[in-house]
Image 1 (tube, helix red, strand yellow):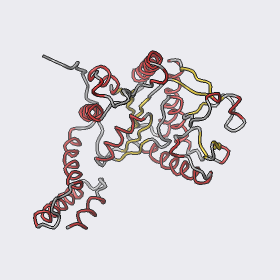
Image 2: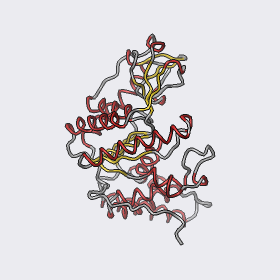
Image 3: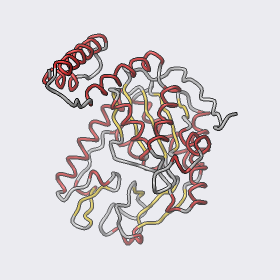
Image 4: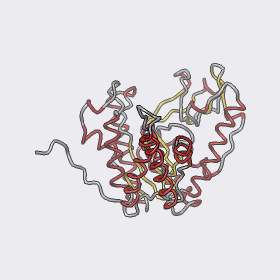
Length: 334
């Protein structure tokens, strides 16, 4: 008897290779994918603006990377003694305006360089809701009707909230992809929809929001070449479909859930030879994390020497991997 619904995950025609460069952007679920790939030594850059939820914010950020936008003092605003950017997550905020600008512009430059040469762009959309500034916010910010990526806990009266229409989302994504592919024509794009519920919008409104994102993304995938959909949302909502796969807030998927999605992502989106290399890298990482009960023994020293030799062999065979940290660790503990 089957206890889980089956989703027929098709293999990508040109799956991700270890040599590929990957840019990831979007909601917090983006970082589950990005952190996992980074830990296994894939070449990734994730969320250069920090976490972004809406397609308007994602598209605006990608076009800023393409144009290598340099943020200026007037692009920041002061709230409760901290300088913020409406285009960025609060991780780029600072009590010093100069320090905040440096954080932002260093990230912008990295994102531009990555987007220019990336093989893959992974976009995870979280919400179809958009927030625009009102006149009350204009005195301290970028101007009336400017859309923001993050509200930074500013007063609610500073914002006008709306749910984007499907046609508007499609237009945003279509125009954005067209522009960034002028710089990088070979760029392949994977879309996912975050399974995290935006419960503050209400259960019904959250479902309407997710539905609009799903339909918009499928219209893009069906009309633009080298764009794909990975069903992270469906894997959690329809396959796992149980609150034991959620965190204590009943909103965020927990570790078993995200691990399951990442396993399916690996099977569907990553090339077979790279999956084999992932196993070798995972063994090296686990050896690096090993904490012996008796570190002074010959047995442990032999374990370190064998691990060092293994890392060197992998590095020699795959010189594009960055295993400097592991080589340094094993070399200094033998």
